[in-house]
Image (cartoon, rainbow, N blue to C red; front, top):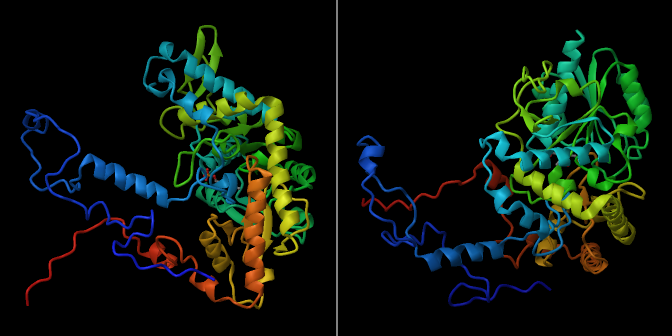
Amino acid sequence: MDRPKTETLSGNQGLRIEEPLIFEQDAPGRCGVDLPETDLADNRLGGVERQDPVGLPGLSEPQVVRHFTRLSQKNYGIDSGFYPLGSCTMKHNPRLNEKMARLQGLGDLHPLQPESTVQGALEMIDTLAHWLKELTGMPAVAMSPAAGAHGELCGIMAIRAALEDRGDPRSRVLVPESAHGTNPATAAACGYSIDSIPADDRGRVDLEAFKSMLGDDVAAIMLTNPNTCGLFENDIIEIADAVHDAGAFFYCDGANFNAIVGRVRPGDLGVDCMHLNLHKTFSTPHGGGGPGSGPTVLSEPLAPFAPLPFVVHGKNGFHLVETIDDPIGGSAKSFGRMKGFHGQMGMFIRSLAYILSHGADGLRQVSGDAVLNANYLLAELSDDLTASFPGPCMHEALFDDRFLKGTGVSTLDFAKAMIDEGFHPMTMYFPLVVSGALLMEPTETESKDALDQYIAVVKGLAAKAKSGNDGPFHEAPVLTPRQRLDETAAARNPVLRWTPPVEEAAE
Ligand SMILES: *Cc1c(COP(=O)(O)O)cnc(C)c1O
């Protein structure tokens, strides 16, 4: 029985405060800080002075503090509870990483400081690069890509440069239909046409179909392993061999490296390049648009084309190679620069802290625990939901909407009902290869207790949906500050700027 909201005098619901937008709280002239009068305006702006108000709301310091504290309490995050979206969106970030990133000597660095004053920082980038090469079994790594998709761009640009260098430009890139949307987008951005490789009934690449698509116009395959169905592509070595026999390169989307780190080295599988989402495998806070970090490992044939800049360890310490003709480590074949400065330094520090605090054995346990937790969900929920593919799975357990058939409840309704139960929903409707997908990634840090609570709720909701009383599902969530929103309208017509209400014109 869903509890209806109780009317209150204030509009507040217990400790949940209903308050206007910060702009609606504006009291002109109110201010949280005392700013000294300045006589610089004329000089600095050459006599140009702003006439109209800046548009910032006037509030006192306690108002600002309360407003943002309340907003933070309305948000559901990894620090508030179980988050079945998994590493793709957020996993637990050990606080040690944060402490390291805030050390004064690191947090206050500036990328334009003289090289002699940032030797320690360059050494850290070099040490992280070493670990990434070691863990992937690859000879080179480009550190500058700023996220997974940027790493894909790095890899495909290196492949294109290598093919052009050997006078063999090619036109097609093969991408499995289960791939993350960034894969075909990247290849298209680099000028390639995309051919979609069908999946077989095991949720993996259809090997025969794939082989028949290869030809001397194929530049690369972009394969995710483990794939987005949470399954290991177990024909990967045969795939790599076929790709190489066709003179093409093997791009592996390594966003899900958290499932295999410390156990499988992609270099041993025949991979030519692969981005690592430091923000997925090696923690570091992300989500909501950033920051990410997507170092991209490269094989011997691709390494000469790596982007600038990169760190070399020369006779006189660590050196950042920033031009193709740098006397210490220039690389004439580099395809150039992908972003300003050296990469996401704050993410590098956090990832290195994560790697060093776990050690090789700890990282191996991370992937083991991530896979164990996902398989626990798969095993416990398979009788209540419909598992899309038989287990075992890797880091993610994939279910689909067949268990909801005839109930009138959709995947969306089911996910919304989880919010009323105090849980963040799982990933919905992705991957696209199964209908009405419900994808769950618990990650390595969740305890059995936390998983059991979640399992009990999912089982309970499944039973409720099947009982024939679908009403509450269509309304859900009803216990939140805002209820079912029109997400399509929100996406199509976002209101990104608050405008003061227009005074009704007198007729
Ligand atoms: C997250 C993800 C990406 C993209 O990474 P971003 O850092 O979000 O750009 C690409 N492929 C897969 C499989 C992913 O999970």
